[in-house]
Image (tube, rainbow, N blue to C red; front, top):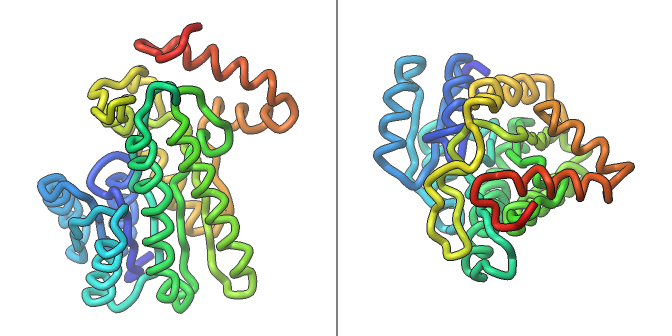
Length: 269
């Protein structure tokens, strides 16, 4: 990774920040993208202990012209792009019948369209470097989760988009990785939108029992190095995906019961 340029959207916290630290330790040029300039600055200070080659870009990936700015600034500072990690994302929790349409749109705009915009704009540079495009998906992109309609839809859409991109470029030596971390202690649930669009502030799950963002970042780093197609993490995640292939109706019931036990669940057990 020494000297390679890595863009990480949603790079100021959670899995994105952990990936930035992991790649920085290996000598990569790091570009972290986020909407919060203060968080970006604090993360950049931590990264500069590891490498002097750090660029922060304040941008909202759901806005195309801001994605153009991300790519322009990266190329201007580092001359090209080797790896794009599409990590920026927001979650939601609420029954579809109770959730405002603009909340659904907001999730899709960040999680799906943000990936599309950044990937489309970075693709010419990554093809030139025979590099990697990474999508941080979720088990929710393999199995629709009740109470997370927009989040699951955005991750299903991301995976379809990236699988198509991979197939289109079979002869171009483009590496496309779809990573599904499973439940990870990353802070995403604290900022998950409720049916009214207001962040719920508190995670409904015990974050201390989950896989850490640092562990997830190591798996992603190794998958990029070895140019793997897919990574599915956590035992529950792997089991869910496997069983859903053969016993989807059973998994429907198991997933329903599991998520219904969350504090404040929008549906009954």
